[in-house]
Image (tube, rainbow, N blue to C red; front, top):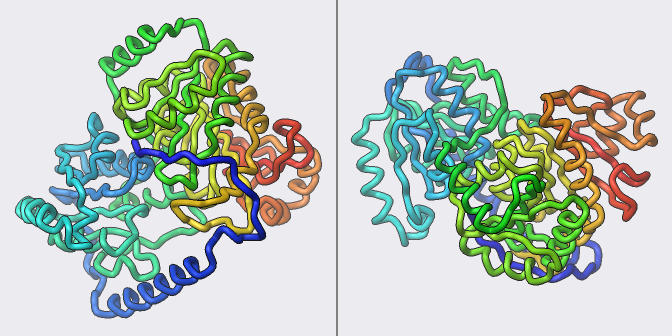
Amino acid sequence: MSSAAGGGRGVVAGRGAHVGGLRWLARVAARAVRTAVFRLGGLFVRPHRGPLPAAPARILVLQLQQLGDSVIFTPTLRALRERFPSATIDLLATPAAAQVYRKSPYLDEIHVTHGWQGAFRGAGLRKLLPLLRELRGRAYDCTITDLAQQSFRFALIAWLVRAPWRIGFDIAGRGLLHNVRIPYRADASWVDANLDIARALGATPASLREEVAFDRSDEERVRAALADAGHAPERKLVVMHTGANWQSRTWYPERWSALADAVADRHEATIVFVGGGGERAYVDAVRAGMTRPSVSLAGVTDIPQLAALCRMSDLFVGTDSGPRHIARASGCAHVVVMSAQDDTDQWAGWGRGEVILRSFPSCSGCYFPRCAHKICMDAIETQRVLGWCERALADARAREAEPRQDRIEMPPRLQGMAARGKAVLRALAQAPVEAEMPMPVARSLLLNQSPTGPGSGSDQVGGR
């Protein structure tokens, strides 16, 4: 799991002042130049014009991105295995991705690469080349590169493996080295868009369900750790992940402390903090601000054990980071405190009760690793998060009793608009919304906030 940096309470500056005008313009200009170069280069690389392999014997899947990116690809991997049960399917992965797939029943072998990003700055080339030579010797029929790996460097790695078919997405010309280019559906979530790879190879995926495999030994280790920490099985179990890979995506320690105390007080819950070893200091700061006891498993659980912990928990609360995707894959109801960098629907998938809290300042979509003001996170108040946590915990017993189709909940002032047409509602909510539509996932998107609790008059709630 990624380490996280802390951050104090944001200071509201002028409209979009924290974006850093010159830095933002330089980034946009550089991206425009790269796009032009890639599209020009694409004129000299012809897509494969023959039929795709009906039954490839050897497939190499690239998973060289972050933890969450690996989790959202799991439905596609499952569909590939169902389509090609006799094929060899191997994985080229970062250490984080390898943890996600370590116990997956769909893979034959995992090749782990460390520090491969440095190869494109000259630092890690000597580490990468021997592995690429080994992979070329495996004579793969095709490589598969998913939507999270749309940068040119991923297409280059696939090309260096020298498989006859290189399957991936070509967005803004960056996939010019793929000779089988999957059209990108901008209106689909990344979970569903990735499945277009499997569909192109003849698969018929039946589910968006993500998964992180774990076994009984993982459950036993988690139960032992909880028992050692004093957790009583009859108490509710609430898991919190306070970190993120970027400082700009973190919430505030004092708000985490207040939230954890309130949930523990009102629901007689054991609060368990999780994260990587690099997040221990941040977790310690949160726990130091609490008045109620809590448990820290930061740096203790691996990914399968974290999945097992989420499966046995009543609620997960976290930032927009990898553990949030593990919670969803485990079927755990979860509340996400999300920055304004990403589109919420980009990550939509399968789940048992997903609530996403997000604000929309003028600087939305900045995608900066660090932010001095964090206006978007400052807008998400503790009481707002607590209200949704309480709703999720109150509904936990009903969810456990029987699977059911949840419905999107809307304040009365939006129900009339929804009845007059989805187009009006989309314009207001800035996200695909449908009133009273049966949903496999109860997702809630908070666009505007008030201090009075979920469902108040200024809330706009929607989902996929």
